[in-house]
Amino acid sequence: MIIKILGSGCAKCNRLEQLTREAVAELGIEATFEHVKEMDKIMAYPIMTTPALVVDEHVKVAGRIPSKAELVGWLKAG
Image (tube, rainbow, N blue to C red; front, side, top):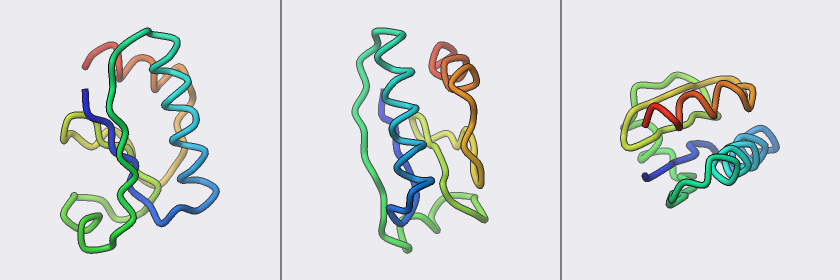
């Protein structure tokens, strides 16, 4: 599983990464994390605001920090 955090590195982006890492650890799944900070790469995704979470090239959320329960649900589903 490849997980990308899209954002400039702000507090919200870092919080999203932290929560996602916690959810991955809870589930005991293998995941590779990438923090995408380059605006041209962020703009390649269909999002209007950051932070955003992309799992295996599917945008799961953008513009807000989801709850850990939401993250766990998305990661279980793949």
